[in-house]
Image 1 (cartoon, rainbow, N blue to C red):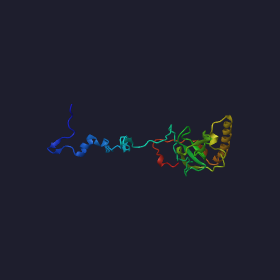
Image 2 (image 1 turned 45 degrees about the vertical axis):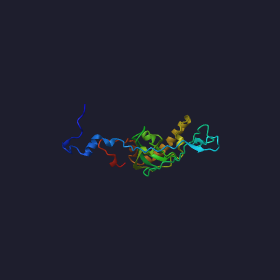
Image 3 (image 1 turned 120 degrees about the vertical axis):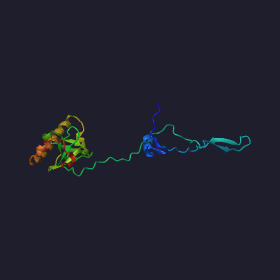
Image 4 (image 1 turned 180 degrees about the vertical axis):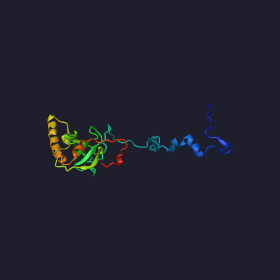
Length: 219
């Protein structure tokens, strides 16, 4: 069944819809306007050469490109050149040793932790402390934390802890982690107890309620 035309004439020579309106109805702007490239003449694969001798036929048809004399029997794989160099991520200026951070993702999201140092892998070494809010010594990517304005005077802690400390090994490793956690907690708690309400602040979980706008908050 034929449909009615998209455009009609009010009077002879005067259309109801303009050319741009009709162009939009046809949706011609959505069609790919690929230009057709001009066909290039193919290079001849053979050429005719003149040869001497009365009994040689005077001409020979030979390939235009001479085949190489030697070629590899198998294609040798060529490794790709990788010019990228892996480096340590630059630490944000708002994150310094002793800064209280808010974890945004993972098992301990919403918890407040104390930043200890940046490891050679670029990850942040943090702790709750464990005795306050249950967050152990842990590596966190700085993309998933919010730095607050709260900061404590951090003593010399976790100097021997590196990325190898977190590798899964035998039971001796678990005992080493327990001893390291106890040593770090004792030094940080001695500083936390000097500031009123700081222990309760670290133990409180960060949450947002209706009507709170993060961009207007000061952490």
